[in-house]
Length: 190
Image 1: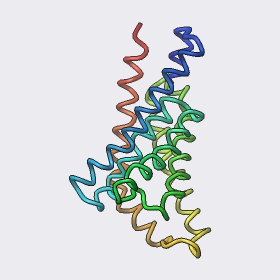
Image 2: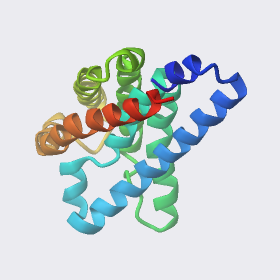
Image 3: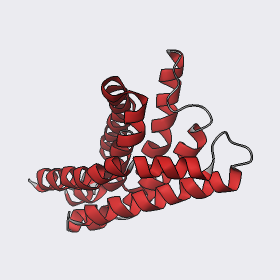
């Protein structure tokens, strides 16, 4: 969506990169900070239920498209892991990190595929977010299935966490598109 807005306003390539970089860094920062807030309020189970890192990544895909969105999706769990490890409580935990990188990368790519459609009609954000959520969670589950002999969690455990996280996914399926609709209206103003 942002690319379409910048192209319509005939923004120079260098400035486009600057705007996308600022948006990416902001979203990655949000993806690190939101889980910390949720964990402070609701503890570790709150993170599994509300999935706070997912919201900025979904917004990143819708806003920035697949190419820039996947950067947000990959760097968000990496940045969170690096920062929280420095304080002795890695989030996500190391065994889960590659799976979250994969899942959030998929979230951003799928949501990003709808970026131009969202610019044309912001209601497409609902489709983008739900498609990203379903695809990302399915890829996570399939990756665990394929690697369950090598990782400390099982398909049943991850399936249970997916069920627990339905409230968070439902909230994000509404919240992320509403944010995109508001942003689209604001960005389209001259």
